[in-house]
Image (tube, protein in one colour):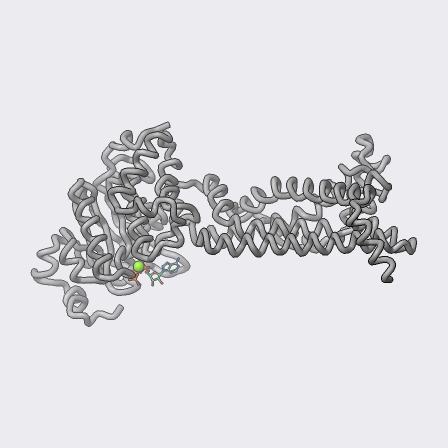
Length: 231
Length: 243
Ligand SMILES: Nc1ncnc2c1ncn2[C@@H]1O[C@H](COP(=O)(O)OP(=O)(O)OP(=O)(O)O)[C@@H](O)[C@H]1O
Ligand SMILES: [Mg+2]
């Protein structure tokens, strides 16, 4: 055990190339997925908060339920879509980082949509009369509400980032854990542990923990700062 | 792009004709016929729950009458040249200056003109030193002053105010009252509610008295306070009408 930790710190300290490559790919995949999910989820969630249409309740329940979607199921869905015999098989995206980004976007999107909906709905209840009085249409209110809810929304986006960077099921199924190509921190930990080579697994585990800690520190700090600064 | 100066078609008088408002089986406003004339200061009085805030919201166009009608002289469904200061105004989570800019940008006022209006409004309302401060962190009195300033920046022909000084100390109250008098001198019609009878006497040219969603009286202020009265009015002014 001690040996594994010593070797792990050695890998981190020396900036081992394979290790750095894995970290880089993980961050690239997850951050891209977070960006895409936010781009789609923020307006979608806000629209869902303000729009009234038949079946709205069902859509809300669906997105809430999808927040608990097991990553392996998301992976399986994307696998079925992208596999050679699937509807999008022609794109040859299976076992590429792009496929992993798609799968993680599917995991993050419900979190961003549901949280945005609830934040914007609460704000809208408080702001509706005032914004209408100032001359804002429902559509024009959307960016205003997103901006005024920015602190809470950031927390939700960070939660999405946390979920995606911690999951292994989806990226393993659609990425295939190919060394140097689709191997991420979580898939590498799974593989290396199974093979009994613990030092890389422990090094990646430490980095993942550190990342999570840093993320939460940033989220908390941003919240504190905003409360003091924005009211 | 439109300029604030383009908004000069007369929207007053505003006429409510037999207007009523009903939700969930409760008749909250009944058969209100009321004329809001240009340039006058109208104070709406009545006990808690009489429907004063609802009446303001109905006039302002935030709710629609469920019976009767609301007619602007300009023929618009909802006139643009109006503004309202709410009982609890909502300020946006941005700077004081940005709060003033917001309604102007909604109207598509060109940037240069907006900057001019924001600067002159800040100066007029003594908010210059607070321009870059987050609006939500201002004191209650400063927030109210900003809400009044924001409403004025919208160049309204009629300004609705719902208990604009109910949470303020006497000196802040005096400041808001003198602002209201200033607007009135500029020709802006004022429609406001208050529970402060002293304030009503100081500011009202006309009084509308509401009780349980009905308009009991609407007459010049001196006649309301000193002339013969409806029994509800007498009880209200004597402090005996609870609701
Ligand atoms: N959306 C609503 N649904 C049901 N009842 C409502 C609604 N809005 C207002 N009411 C009721 O209508 C009545 C009039 O409310 P309103 O806020 O206009 O009173 P008010 O005269 O402004 O009272 P106050 O002096 O306390 O501010 C109250 O009894 C209130 O509970
Ligand atoms: Mg009220």
